[in-house]
Structure formats: C-alpha cells, structure tokens
Image (cartoon, rainbow, N blue to C red; front, side, top):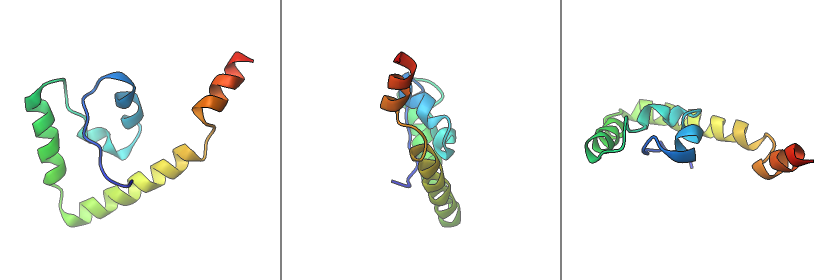
Length: 79
C-alpha cells in the first residue's frame, strides 16, 4: 500500500516488517506506551520523508512480490 506499518514486535509480522523500510516503526516491545511512541514517530516525519518512505516501501514490496510465493517455497521444500 506504500504506507508505513506500525506494529508490535511479535509473531510473523515482526519478521516481515523487519526487512522493509517500516522496520523503524516497530514498537520496541508489547505495551501501549511503546506503540504510541511508534505511532508518534510515524506522525513526526515531514512530507519529503513520507514521500521517500512511500517510494522505498513500494520498491521493497515489488522486490518481495517478484520472488517465489510462500506456497511455492513450501511446496518446493516438501517435495
């Protein structure tokens, strides 16, 4: 979607987001305080930074989507 993702550092989302430009917006741990801090971090970026981030996220998404799908990777690993 080209927008930063703010999330808690748990589960698969942390691994997925960790390889994208949104990695700097992961909450440090699971708490309301750290989540709010991460949201404020996103809200504090200036318009030029936001446009650059959007471009970087879009490029990362294209790179990830051009690779093999999870289903293909699992099928290949299990065969």
